[in-house]
Image 1 (cartoon, rainbow, N blue to C red):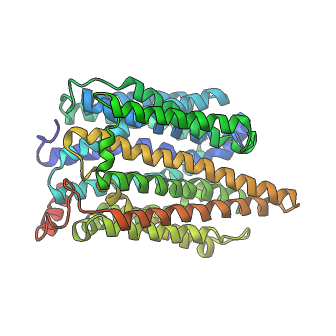
Image 2 (image 1 turned 180 degrees about the horizontal axis):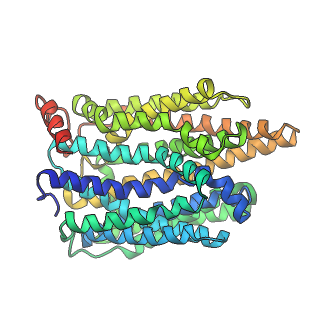
Image 3 (image 1 turned 90 degrees about the horizontal axis):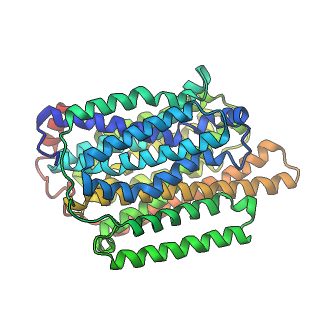
Length: 491
């Protein structure tokens, strides 16, 4: 148990935990601006290049539930440190890669380490901060790392690729990983898991992991293999059967990997549905907009990173202060719905960006709205996912919402990239110029991304309620300003 840490040490521990999470989140998007350089250097095709991103998301999403459960069983600190070690070693392998196979395999191992770190870090933070106002502040910081880390990744990726080479977007993780490991040893005491003594649901872990991986693989290769081909339909069918088997196992096993009863908790169910939809929209923004800026507008990697900077600054401004205050004042439902709605409008603006677009007119407005939306929405989404669960299930709930977010991103990116590619191929067949064909495909992806964000806003706005364990405004009425100010001072 880590919640016995007092005073400044708790906030120092939060900073170190968030630094570890930032390293993980960065690698979700840091490669985006380096993709053309990686493709040229290692000979990736347009289709196979997606696997540099999806190999990471695939294992990340596939192992989040297992990582969260292992943290509940064997201790969150122990799993966090193990994940940091695995991720750091895999980053070294990525940075030294000289072939397609080595890079994709190393990215997959990175995803595994990242899954463990992400699944247990949220539980550690929830146990560190139990007071409503302090928890809202801490979750605001965590939310900024998760939401803003993607934009930081694009900026850092552009800088490193432009100044050094794409190898350094991975090698930069080494000193960070070593520092996080050493600091966590000193700040976080070892402790037993909340669910110690229970058995690990090996069958459930195997079936859900393979099911999720097969589904992503089928969708990513849908355009190349054909959407009605035996390969695509067969893989999707096997994925559905395995998912059904997983549900059957979870309904009968004594200590399930994912207790189905958790989905009877309204906020858990709603937050996970919203996370899937929102992640699909977010990854459309990061991945597709980076490609638009490079391949249509001709931006250099560093210019792409700078283009994301306004959104990153806005997310920092909201996540590190205003988002927590919004949650304490309005609860989790209204900020979530408003934030996701604003993000949907931002994606629609990208869906009209022309081939000869200008940054101030055609890129900046969408970036600003997406920064506002992500900054407002991410904190309440995380709080909603954890608000109804007991401490002994915190690792599982954290793993569930992270699984939903990463698998929503992986599946959403696979679908949207496939739709974009199909539209671009149609335009190319009609003899449209290359830039026009690419832009037409990106427009389709942005429109569907906006639809996903709008649906997430609708789901959250209609069905979320005040949670039992979250920092609801009613629980902190009259004290929110003082408590939030004290939390800020302790940082």
